[in-house]
Length: 498
Image (cartoon, rainbow, N blue to C red):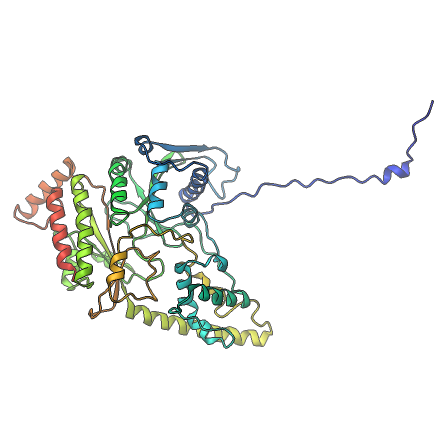
C-alpha cells in the first residue's frame, strides 16, 4: 500500500496566494447644479442609447404619435451628491422625434453629446466644414504669428489640404482642449408664460419647460407638424422640435421640450427682437432693457427705423416660406406666435475680435516672460494655450447631415454677400446675410417661435377685454382670430424686409 507524499511545512509556506482585484463598472456621472438637469441629462443619455437598438421603421404609424417610453429609478447608485436617489423619466413619441431629428440633419449621437456631456475637441474628427472653418477662424491670427506654422487660408480650394495643415500644428504644439461645463445653462430670456429656457453647453439646442396643458397641445400639434415638415422637406421657419420629456423629481412632474437654437453658437447676437406685427403693449419694459441682451418688440423696431436688408429676390423667397408657415398655423387655429429676430453686427464683431486678440497677445507675452524667468518653457501649451478651445462653438454636430432643404439655404446661395468667413451653413441654418449695399453689414437670424397658442375661449375673452380697454377700432391688439393675426403678421414682415 503506497503512501501519499507528505508536504513539509516549508513547502506550504511557498504556496502563493492569489489576490483578486474587484473591477467596478465605469459609471457615467451627470453632475449639474439642479437635480432636474442631472435627471434630464441622464434621461437623454438613456433614451438615445435605447433608441439605437430599435430598428428604424419604414414609415410612422398613428400609434407612434401616442407612444412613449418611461423608466422609474430607485436608489440610483445610493449617491445623492450627483443625482436624486429616486426619479422617473418619460419620453414622448420617441420614434417621431427621432425621425424629426433625422429630417433636420441632427445625428442622435451629436444630440446626446450636446445635451449630456462635454466632448473635448478631437482634431481627427475635424473633417466637417463647420469644425474646420470655426477652428481656422480662431487660430488664424495665432498661426500667422508662428514662424514655423504654415498660414491657414479660408479660401483654399482644397478642404482636405486645410485639414492636413490644421492637424499638424494641433499635435505639434500640444494644444490642451479645455473641458467645458457640460450641463445646460439657464438663459435669462423667460417669457410671460413663466417658462424657463436652458441652453446646451455648445449653444446648439434650447431646453424649454412646458406646462401639462402645453404637452397636450404638443401631442395634437405633432400629428400635423410632422407631415408638414415632410411635405416642406425641412424648408420651414417653424421651431425644430427634437424631443419632449417628463421628468419626475421628488414627486413633482416637470415637462421639457428640446428645440434647435435659432441664434448662432459662434456668432455673437448683438440685438434681438420679438415681432408680432401688433402695436398695443408691444414695447420692451425698462426692466427688460437693463439686461445684457434685452428682447425688443414691435414698437422698438419701428421707432429705431429698423429694416431687414436682404434684397428683393431673397425677400420673395423668405416671404414665401413665412406665408406657407402662417397658413399652416392658421389652419390649426393657432395664433400669438412671433418672429424671433437676432442681429449680428459684422463691423462690431470685427472690432471685438481685434480687441480680444490684443488682450490674448498681451496675456501671452506676460506668460512668456513668466516662463522665461521660471525656465518652464511652453509646458505643452501652444499659442494662447487651452484658452483656444474654451470657446463654446467648436466640436459640435460632427456628423453634419444637412437637411434636404434648410430654411435659408437658397437665400444664402442667392445673396451676393456670403460672408464666407462667418456663416457656417450646416450650423447657422437660420442665417441670412444682408445684401450688398446695405447701410450696415449684418447677419440676420430669424424664425417663428411660440406656436402652441390655440384661439379658444380664453383668448377670445382676452380679446374682448382688450377691445373694451383700447376700443373696437384698434387694429394693433395682439389677441385676434388666427386669420386676422396671420394676415397682419405677414403684412408687417413684408414692410420690415427690404
